Length: 213
Image (tube, rainbow, N blue to C red):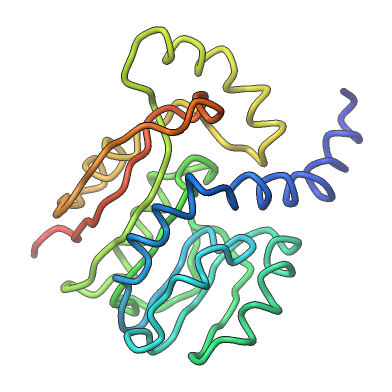
């Protein structure tokens, strides 16, 4: 496909493809379990089209700041954001450069975004910076499969899948990324996606804390 066609697809089609795919029940089930645990001042990295919004507990959230570099995705989130009983602020910015003060957030939420962020290590450094020392990172991700056969297929599909799905990488290991950035895994779990999402590998979720001191 020519470069101009790829650019058009990335701007005009990929956001809707990602929104539709991530609306599936396999994702909603995990959002329903994890997102209500966010509290206080919440920063959501990879806010996208606002698919997490229905699952926040309004009694626990003082402010939600949604960060995403894609203006089309933020446009999809806008109407839902304005109907909520707590304040929502949308920022068009990358995870690698957050326009927020140090120790700003009580909770950072990242769902299905470490796969897409170009430099997840830098983004995790930024998350550490904006989290309060007592804060928590709630994450839900997909990533590197457990079996060697599925891993080989993920490697083969990684590049074409990224072009189709907004830069998503199939073969990243979110737990390794978190540990490499110094986060302590307070809770973690790993499962499998339904067969029709086999290429996404393992389904990860959990809570991580910034390093002590």
